[in-house]
Structure formats: C-alpha cells, structure tokens
Image (cartoon, rainbow, N blue to C red; front, side, top):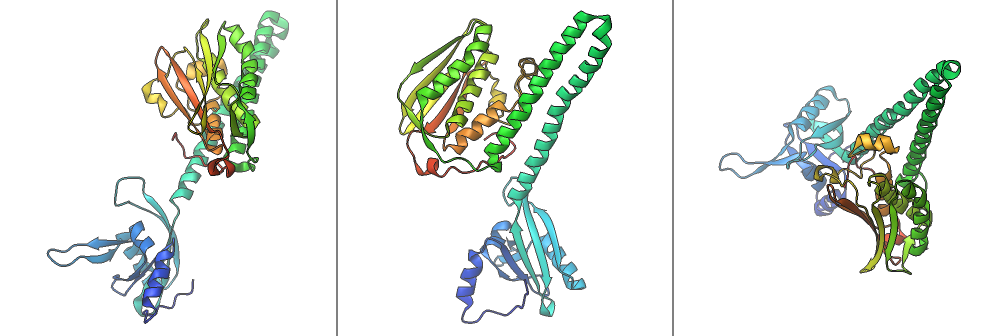
Length: 366
C-alpha cells in the first residue's frame, strides 16, 4: 500500500464511510503517536482505545504495542510486518492481528491490521490433529511390530502362542485399517472434497440398513436391536453419509452396552425436522464428558475403547455429517442407566439443507 497522507477535505465524510466499511483496521499516528485517523475496525480490534485523564474529556490513544511498532518504523524508515496477539477488552483468547506499519511524511506512521485469529485457531487445530493422529497410529503400528517379532520367535517353538500372536496381529491390523478409513472419511467431511447435492432420502431405508449391519455384533452380546416410531419419513442429504452417521451411533450403543440389553432406534417428526434417536441401556456418560465426546479422538472410557477397537472418531464423524446436512446431534445420558443420541435433520429442502456448508473444526466440542 503506497501511503500518501492527506487531510480529508470536502470528501471527508465519504472517506470516513469508506474506511469504516473495511474489515481491516486502518490507523494513522502523528509524530507524537496520537491517532489522527482511525476506522471502525481499528477501534474494534483495540488498536485505538479511549483514555480518561482526571476530569478531562476522553481522548483516543493507540495501543502500547502499536506505539512501540510505530516508533521503530519512524526511526528506521523501514516498513514492518508482524503478527501480534492483542489482549481483548473483554475476557477471552487474545486477538491475533497481522500488522503492517509504514512510515509517512512528517513523522506520521500508517498502520494496517488484519484479524487472523480464525486462521491461528485453524492452524492450532491442525497441529493438534496431526499430533493426535501420530499418537493414535503409533500404538497399533508399535503393537504390530512387537507381535510380528514374537510370532517369528514362536513359529517353531510354540505353535499355540504363534496362533495367539497371529490373531492379535489381525486384530491390530483391522483397527489400524479402520482408523485410516475414518480419518479419510473425516477429511472428506471437513471440506477436502466437495459435498454432494442433497437429495430426498427414505429414512426407513436408512434404519433398515443400519439395523441389518448391527445384527452380527448385537447377536454376539445377545443384545436386542429394536425399531419403533414413524414410518415413511424423508430427510434431505446424502444417503451414504446419513447411513454412516446412524450406524456409528448404533455401533457405539452396542459396544458400550452390557450383554442381554436392548438398543432402540426411534424415528419421529418435529416441526420440519426428522429425529432419529438411538437409545441404549449401557454404562452412560459422566457429566464432565458430555461436552467433549464429539471431539476427535476423545474417549470417555479409553480402556473400553481400546478393547472394542474404537478409534475415537465415530462421534466426530456423526457431528460433521449432521452439521453438513443443516442438522445437529445431541445426547442425554445417565451413568449406569444408558444414553440416547438424537440426530435431527431437515425434512424438507430448506435453504440450510440446499446450500450445505463445508465443516470447519474448532478443537473442541460445540
């Protein structure tokens, strides 16, 4: 930006309106670091603040960090571009700002500031995601290596042990394959691939497919899979994704329920939305975990998740599918009694459903 500062004349009101319409903060300091021009965004970012001195009228003052940066540019004449974390006027995470300071004539300095808080948050989420993926992959890969070595040692000496090690290798490799598959699915849901156009989907078809998939794991624990509710309902979205979401909920219900209990899938319609609820008679969820169970890799019961082959991604996938379809997923739970997960989806092609937005991950549950 080639700055040539001129005091606005007749066009002053129009210039002020233009500057206030900008999303970037614009601030000009005089040779004494006093603001001579500041737009609305600069004030919202806290680059300029009101200062009350005794009984005198309030005056505007530039942020201390901005004044320091302006002093450096004024002395050297070199344009500076830096990223700063500015404390907010209210409590909360600091405001990430990309600041460009340019020396003008007569000791004036122009400041241009862009809010990059969201970009910082996304970068932090990605770093955490990579760290979590690395940790999760390290466990099965390390186990496979140790088991393969043990299998080689036991092949000739102890055939029975060799069989056990081979079974464990199969278990760990299955878990690893599932983890990679769910990571790819989550990546697609978060915008790596364009989402398909929403189409009418028969809810009966979804529940039939999910109940059929759940028969084998449910039978192994003598769990009764039951359906009840309204037939003939329709939602709008992608059938494969919706089947995945409901199947993940049913799979979790089976995995975290004791033997000889019941898992119930219920469908209903409410004010333009279809609700698909999955209720179990399982171990329940502690109140402290309720707000976090939809986070990637979060497990309320890590030991149980390991035993069942859980990846910690199933509920995160459900949440993204619900969000991408203009809906949401909620949970109610009582420890020792059971949990009910409810998927709420549009029953008609509303604006939210027709223009499915890509998901963005905010490191935590929402």
